[in-house]
Length: 306
Image 1 (tube, rainbow, N blue to C red):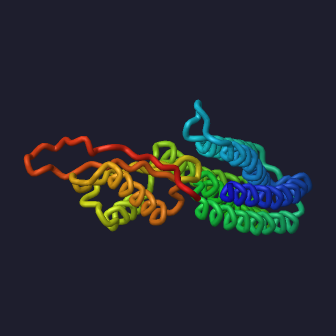
Image 2 (image 1 turned 45 degrees about the horizontal axis):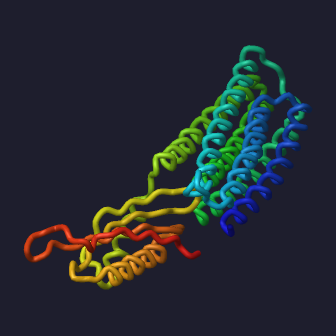
Image 3 (image 1 turned 180 degrees about the vertical axis):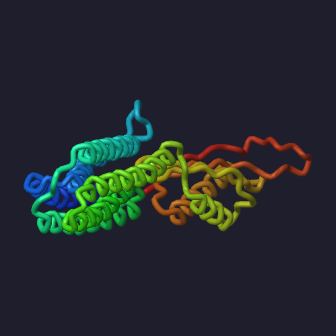
């Protein structure tokens, strides 16, 4: 709940900042006719609107698990990531179309000082929002929010590129504005690649191998764990779940083996950031007669207390 609230606060604050920046830039676009600034404004507007699907995902993620969605609604955040990627792609298409149209039909850009000021305002607003989103996204483990922050950061640099277009226009190079518009399109495509890769990795249940290393080390440190088998993790929204196999003494009672599994789960939750639940399977070392199977092996599943 607390991580969802932190995500929502970040989204609403960034939405307000980017909406103000977009309104200022849109007014200057109407005044000047700058296609480079138009591309930047469209990108800013798209970035602001991505707060909507993310906000819906954070609200859905608060709902409790039920018999249909037994793991809860955390995956809604990954679906929001797909919408964000699609929004970035649409803004790239629109920016490219406007730039090519201006190259084919050149027009002068007016009020260059206003264009320069709007570009600086766009950079400042986007960089502030990018830092806020990336910091919060990494803290709560939200890949979609980090991707949105990277999107905002690219918007900031594309705003600076608008300054180049204004400078070229001031020197009499009419093609400077649409050329910068095409460069902005390229920058959008680069951030699209990064965001899509991050979201696809999350959809494919990718985790940082360092998290698996930390989990294995934590399990081996538990008194009574003789060895560690397979460890698996997956993200559900901005929370991690884990499944792990541990090897214990074949002479343990069922009660003692259960207590050891609980201790292993607690060790995992304390060692791995954003891990909220774990299922630990206890197995045993081969018995002296070589029989690898006894009634001891069992599964224990415990919801985490956070």
